[in-house]
Amino acid sequence: MNYTENSMEGKVKRTYKDSLFKFLFGNEDHKEWALSLFNAINGTDYQDADELEIVDSDNVFYLQIREDVVIIYDRVIHFFEHQSTYTPNLPLRMLNYLAKEETRHLTKTEQSYFSPRKANLLRPKFYVIYNGEERPDLGETAELRLSDLYDGKKEGDGLGHGYDLDLIVHVINVNNGYNKGIQGACRPLLEYCWMVDSIRKWIKRTGNLEKAVDEMLKELPEEYEIYGAVMENRVKVIKMMFDEMDNEMHLRFLMKENESGFQKAREEGERVGMEKGVAKGIEIGKEEGIEIGKEKGKEEGRVEGEKKNQRKIVQRMDEKGYSDEMILDVTGITADELERIRKESGNG
Image 1 (cartoon, one colour):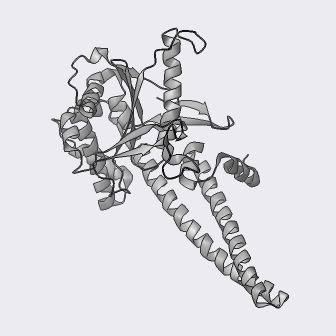
Image 2 (cartoon, one colour):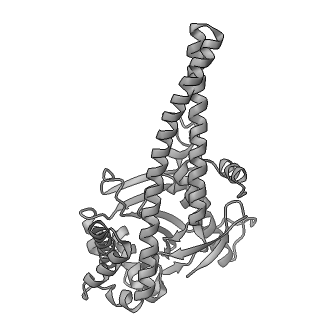
């Protein structure tokens, strides 16, 4: 399913695509797989898939590829998102998710913000299904907290003391060898992870993404629960997997390039700064002038080098069609800085 939405600044229309994860677990055609995922994560044994509601959220998180699945069961709303690239900003994105879905729930149940009666909200739970490769230290599970993103947070601060809002995201590692109990309890999840692992294996062997997807499908065991749905939608699945893996590889490349670019910018800044500092110091004719000039020049050169690298990364991600949210995650810049960079580059 393709759809468009305004970017964070409300200026650029972008196209969004569903991932294979969403196709498998966020699809009304096989709600039993969504219920299986729900039960495996929660340790429950619900049987009636018809009682489960799958919410098709519009354009949540401004993601390039939609990897989100929202499930409501027994007045609890579960937010699932698949991630192959790690980001500590997931709690902030989940907060956006929650506000959107609780508002939708109020409208559906004819409740109002302004009513004198207490609103009945859904109880939220937040999960990330992680199968990336850049965090081998993650372990079985991890928790990400919204409060960890607060600027100026001090040691000893806690809920009700220092800040009044927090949100916890449970990260579940489903890489090979992790959380075997959860994967064993949800066969479609285990089989999905096998597909991703197989593609990565063939990419390493062939260096060709298209070839890797093709070889994975040849190897897909016929006894898998997801086999029929995958093969019946073979063309769509190939497109989804190709987009998904290409997106993962490109993001990893950009993150690596971003880190490398900042290091080069820092080194270039120090070199230019040293030259400026020496010249400044000679002009002043004092030893302290040399040191002051060196430090000032190094800082000015470093800042200018980082700005050049940021412009380069933003331009390449804009050309690739990445969302503003993803650009901010990769570069670490603010929305205002992104807008400034685009204006300087003539793309604002």
